Length: 255
Image 1: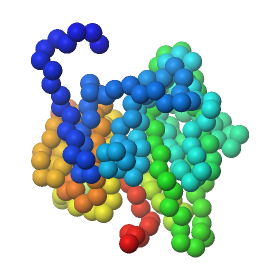
Image 2: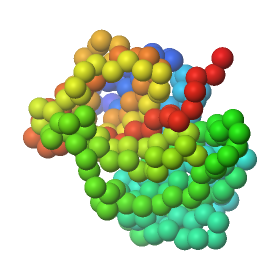
Image 3: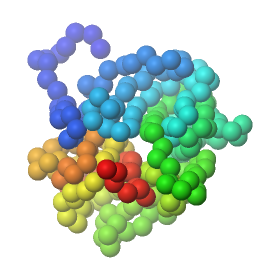
Image 4: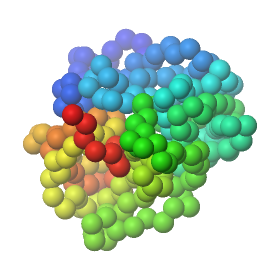
């Protein structure tokens, strides 16, 4: 980075347990055992108030994690934002290109390796898995690509599209979605709900309402949205505003 070119300033907003905006220019590299030749930033974590951990990773040539990612009781998910990555789980290999993803349930270890000489950019997630009370169903390894998933109208609005990346099955205690808004598109109302989100902006620009503060946001930014935080967005600019986000689901609130 070198010497600063102007006064030190930031678009970051951190309100622990409530919401957070972390732009790319404020992200700091972390050293995490197992990841080699990688620039890795820890985004949301329990220190911020989240029940999950999100990362953004740039794998350079030879970048990899062959030690394995995941641990007992923890589910993991990786999404390829740019480039190509060789992912594997349960001795099965998955070649993920842009838009490709892999979900591993608790007890299944994920391995990652950059599949090109150029950089590959990944979004990575982990969370403790909450089983069904009777353990009647358990999740399984899921891989796919968003370019092969039909986008449906979101809440009957033709200018807002939704894609579900994981099965809508009670075995899963969370899901990943992509929401894409055409310029001028917006949520149908300001949402206030029990679930929390971690979201990485994939394209475009928007203005996001977080706890009744309107905040500009764009491609590359990361958002954490805590439980019960009022939230909604308008898409602005000249291209669709789209983001990938996690959502806890299929479980009752615990006492």
